[in-house]
Image 1 (cartoon, rainbow, N blue to C red):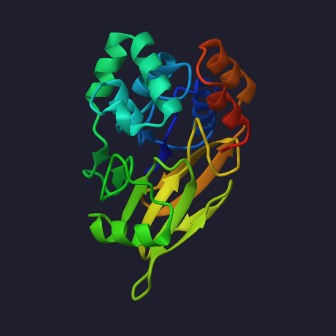
Image 2 (spheres, rainbow, N blue to C red):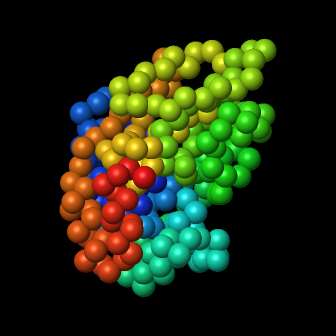
Length: 243
């Protein structure tokens, strides 16, 4: 079975719809989301409703947990805090209730799924080979997928070797048949790897391959929605730079 792996949508409807359209052009049987459906962006209800209808598995991210009140806003940057408070004020209660039912990990599949990492499913950013090494020690599966960092990456540890990692670009395909792996599909709604296009990953659970994909979307429309909501301009500006 092939599945679409998405993460970090961040209330960016334009990016989310573009990715779902791209997923529909493939033979992905299911779509799995690694969390942070809301936060930063200006269309949380639409994005939650899309996730509710389009995903077979959905995790909770730290921004989702902040909006439901399960995490203190003291842990967030000023811009993230402002967006989380605004999101709490505008979201439909039924969508908040749905977010409240999500968890930040799912270890019941053939691959491990975590918002942050196998060591800390909520908060840890896996951006270095050293951290990946520690996470590979902690994970229960040979292959795990994480989000949270907003950077498309792969880390591998082959027998007798230390973990190594590489950024992943549009069209990269990896053979996962050997070694231990930690994969990040990148961010749908707020990429931070210098590529402003929405990111996702196609994972073949049978053939054990992963393909990274990027999708153009209406960045200007997403920026306009943020400004219309009177959220910080920085949250709109960064979308144009992929940072």
